[in-house]
Length: 359
Image (cartoon, rainbow, N blue to C red):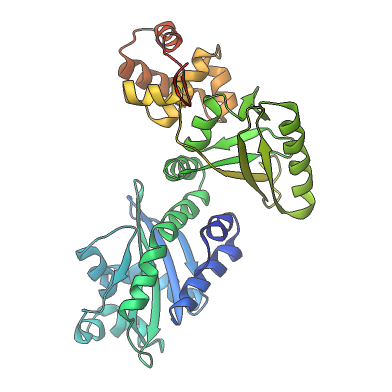
C-alpha cells in the first residue's frame, strides 16, 4: 500500500494521484478502479479512472446509469464514510438484473462482478472510490477488505481534497475544511518563504510564537541559525524537488520539517512544507477552550489582537475581506464582545501558557 506522505503529495498531479490509487488497487489484486464525487446539487465534480473503461462508457454511467448501480445502492443503504465498502452480500441476481448491467455494462462487454473501495464524504457532497474485479476473478476476502479499511480514512480525505482542488472558490474552502482536520502542520510557500496557505495545526503553531513564526506573511524562525537553515533548505528544494531540515531552537527544542516542490504555476505557491505539530499551547488554545473558537477563528482573533485590521488579515491569510469580516462577527458573538476593540482587550488579558504552566 502507498504511504500517507505519497498519497497527499500526489494531490496536485492528475497522473500521480491516479498512480497512487492504482497501487491501492494492485495491493488487493483488483482489476480496475473508478472514483467520483457528487455535489449536493447532483453535479459530478471529480473523476479518476484506472483507464479500464473508455471515456464514453464513463460519461454514460455518470450521465444516466449511476442511480441504477446495484453496488452504489448497497453502499448508500449502509453508509459508512471513511471506511471500506463491502458489497459481498449483494445477490448476483440483483447485479445482473440491474439496468446498469443489462443496458450498459454487459452490452459493452464489461463483466464487472465484485466491488469494494472507499466511501467519501465532506460537507459539499459524497463520493466513492470503487475497486473492481471481473466475473473471472474471485470475490474480495476478509483480509483484503481489512487492508482497504486501514487506508480508507486517508484515501477518503485525499479524494475529498483532490475533488475540491479541481474547482475554484468552493474547492479552496473545502480544502481548508479537510486539511484543518489533519494533525500535521501543512503550509504552502513561495520560493522566498511567503506563506500562501496554512492549515489549523500550522496556524496554531505559528500563533503560539514558538520555533516557527509569521512575520509580515513570511515564514521565519525564532533564531538566526534556524532561519539560515530554513532559507538554505528552501533554496535546495527548488533543485532537488524533495527535502527536509531539522530546525533547532535556542532553548534546545527542535522541529523536523519536510519540503516538496510543487508543479510550477504562475503566481502560485511552489513549496509544500509539513511538520508534526505539537498540541497547540498558549493563546490559541485558550481561545478555543474558553470561547469555543475554531482554529481558524483563533488565528484571525490573534492577528486582530496583534494590530492587524481586517484588510491586513485578509491579505496575510490569502482570503477575502468579506470572509474575514464574517469570521470576526462569529468571533465577537462567541466571545460576547460588541466591538473589535473588546476582542483585543479580552485577548490581551489572557494568561500565556508555557510548557510547564502559566508564564
